[in-house]
Length: 173
Image (cartoon, rainbow, N blue to C red):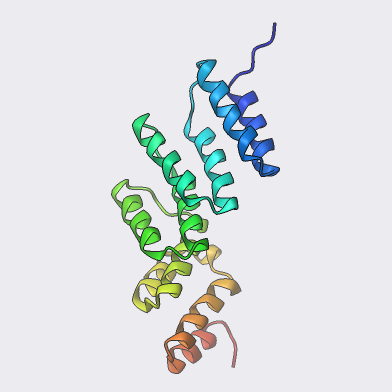
């Protein structure tokens, strides 16, 4: 008699996430609860990822509230998923709130987070904040896409001199 464990359920959940099947993914969660299999942050993040892919803000927010009631500790992936959702849906105030909560939770931004934060600040036209994110990034995290984001911000704000200076730093004369 084989019984599914957390890994089995998470694999099944991942399948439904990849096929964008919300109904079946939610059934997996319901089954896990009835089988008394503990829901861990990875499990929640899988479902959150599905909601992000589908732009389901309300469902994602409800899931976050469920996670809070079960004392699930959010990780950097959870915050990155929320940032992605709010950026994709152009809900920049909510994205900024996520960054504040992330700071309060002492979550250290990773490469993905820095890309998302840079994107957020570019969208908001916040040049100082974008520069701070850029300065905080490791040199291995900085690629041409990062420079392009900053150049777009300078262009958006009409900051030609800063754009030229930034281009010179990457060897574009």
